Length: 115
Image (cartoon, rainbow, N blue to C red):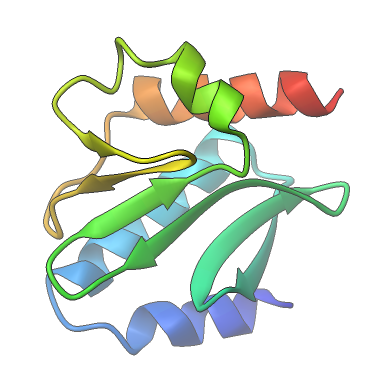
């Protein structure tokens, strides 16, 4: 589990996925700098006190943003309108950087759930 592994994962992606992942990682760490980075389930995960807060993953035709909590995403259903949403993740375009306000809401909701 390390920043180096996450960097390696990001650098292995094709464009525009690589640039999107770089920007998303910067955004997540701007919101909550103390999150620890790890590679789990072939994706970049961000943890607090050893608990996963959010994750992001590059797929063939899209990106996904996740949290292990279906309750967090269900609580933000109105904010996620227009996205393809599953139980604990949602898809976005490979060249799309998610709005900071949305990412912050998800991180804050998950941290509140963990406290």
